[in-house]
Image 1: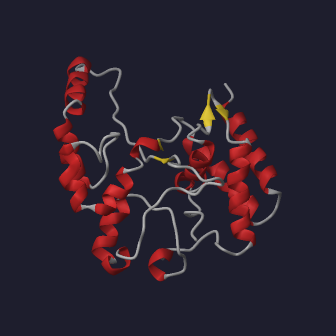
Image 2: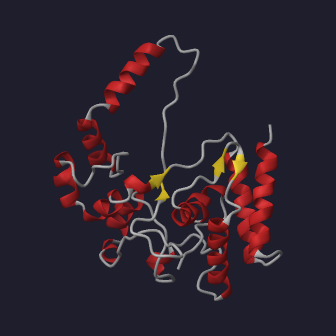
Length: 235
């Protein structure tokens, strides 16, 4: 399987962080300006990845080719944004793909996962803050805009009722792959909010590389990463 998504810092959202959310029951990996992933859930995740590498059931970097398309792997972490790409470029392969939950050590009914959340910025020096805030509230209070959003983008809005609200019924009946992702929106956690995101996840990348290339043990790599992040976030 494709256990790691690549060498870039942002790839950590789709391997270590997503797996950590699942294994920890949705606990944060950064809290109160401290790294919190040097715990049993973190050790379970890095240990799982280490086992995959040791058994040669995965490799660290598959290069530019999508290993699901080339047949090099039987499973990988993918997001709802990949649906349209597969529909356009690999429709026959998409027919063979099944979408399921994140992997966890012990069976869970609905494991948590990663939400690739986006946000809006309202500048403090704006001269129209009240009007802008009123507009934002109006937009996000209208379910019809959520419906239009998913129709235009294929991305699920942050709602827990996507598969039960009649407003979305027809769309998800017509788009079963999108429905498979919508099932997990209620247990999808956004990334930690930090101005040091890039450096935090570069440390996680180094943690994975230390594990892959066995410069230290997996637990030591995890501990070193948490220590680096704590030093980075120290006031």
